[in-house]
Image 1: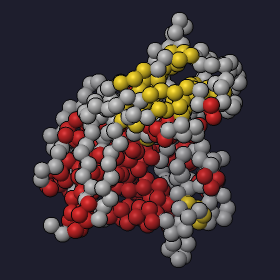
Image 2: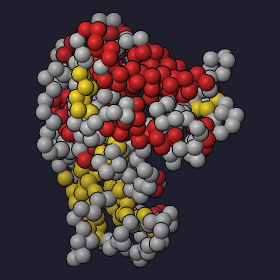
Image 3: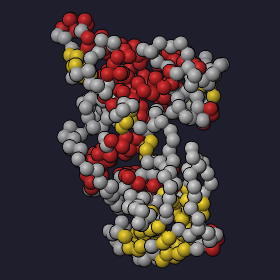
Length: 463
């Protein structure tokens, strides 16, 4: 085996088995980022594709895919990610103090990354032609069609493409349109057309109806439009719908064409206000890549299918499970021989009466607890909170055998300041001795604290 193949084998093994390690805790160290739709959808595809790769390489465990993938798919299809009243998938959830609408282009990019031309439109993998994806697509487009938000889109008719940004509340570089997102809209529509052509029908339901009404006003919920035989198909509603969606896709490409400089350079963004010129990062790789992938789909060039033909039934109940992979660094190819830190889980508990909108966080002097940095503090849960016992808790894996200092902090509402416990951080007013770990029982609680918040509580800001 060559050095390169040794390194590749080590990387493949680590990456494949490292997937799915407690997907509900995906952004756990970055708790304030919450849970991303795009990340969750991409994780499922990664595990399925990783399992196929493992099988092709031989003697690699597929346990991670077998045990974790169905639960990720369950989470992806849960009510947590879909607002049925607004007809939209939510870009991010589980964020303390989250005040955004949930309208987010990551719900467009996720289906692109998970596209399989042979997958059914009702597949739980949430393909581009899925009713929830189409409905969300239209919500996203109509949001940015608003000229008060995006002056660049003023006067564009409802069945034509517009310049798209990340999310309406975006402030990065003033929240302008992105080339890759606008091109991604076209790509998603080309994908959907291909997925309808394969079986020869388009099914419209109450969820997808707003999308279809945009490009085919005669669309009716509960109707399946099928291809007609032979030359008659060109006159069918099915053919009319596919042509209208293709034109819709082309109109998004035209938007990018209109605001691309003569040099052909594709920056990250272009201004939403005059002069509508490129801005932010120059020559963004993803912008060029999105143009290429859009072009491939328009030219009917599709990636290899990945959705399992025997896709298992989505679990009826989602469980926050995890899998610990085995890691083997490719030392013979020059990789460092790193060791995995042994950890034991501690259950932190604190009685802290709070008002609605106030949250309790845990921080401490170890990297696992954020090193006293509130930006890395761990949000505690209140699901067992009662008036008799206002309990907040968090299960945290810590390095075994260490003495760890910790404290609790109140996050108030309305942008008010944090409230630390009475004792100062530098005094490390609380400590916990982390017991030794037991192989295979890293998630078993091996230590418990039972505290009460020291100091006064906060008060609502009334926002």
